[in-house]
Image (cartoon, rainbow, N blue to C red; front, side):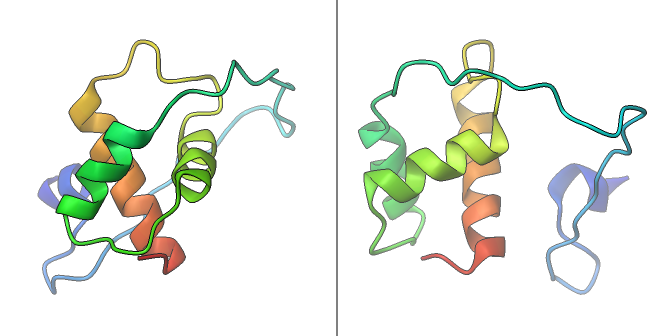
Length: 91
């Protein structure tokens, strides 16, 4: 349960979990207006990810939250985008 919650296994490596979907195709979602991710970028840089651009952060947010981040907690967004970028080898 702890590995699923934190995304880190007992050996200290990242663990990927996914949920299976009943529908084979995803519905098309029109992207919302481009949000300003400078605050998120600064927070990611404070966590040690250097050399990031706002474009990379924006793409990571879109990949993690295709329906938008309106109802999500700021800390959850930061954690999810940080994990996504680390898994992608960015930063």
